[in-house]
Image (tube, rainbow, N blue to C red; front, side):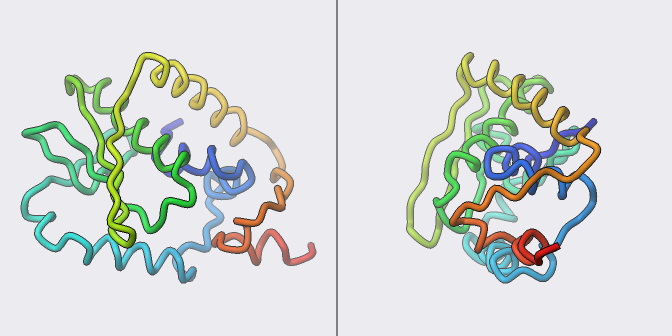
Length: 167
């Protein structure tokens, strides 16, 4: 199974969302927050596409990678799910390491609040990511959809209508 950055991100937010995403059920194309994030990604740093490279490895897609300094730039709409965003970026760093990139680092960027967080990878993170990969594979192998978690952030999720339709 190819684990993507979204798998890791969703693993840290909602296991049901992870299961639905992996099962090919997606509502992201029509969700306002996703459209807002896409627009932010395209407009926040207009010169970036000329300076950095887009790379795809093992199912992950890194939009902005600085090969000279070995820095992955990840743009997020808000910092409300920061731990999930950090986990996603750490996963990208580990995949780069697995492909021979020595000491990559990451920058988690929140243009709307003008904040940047540096993300590095420790030995403890490498171990944790291995555990996440095992957990993700176990969750997506479940034969039925996982239960709704009913958290306040569910209202902003692209799967909200699906999860709370009453069926």
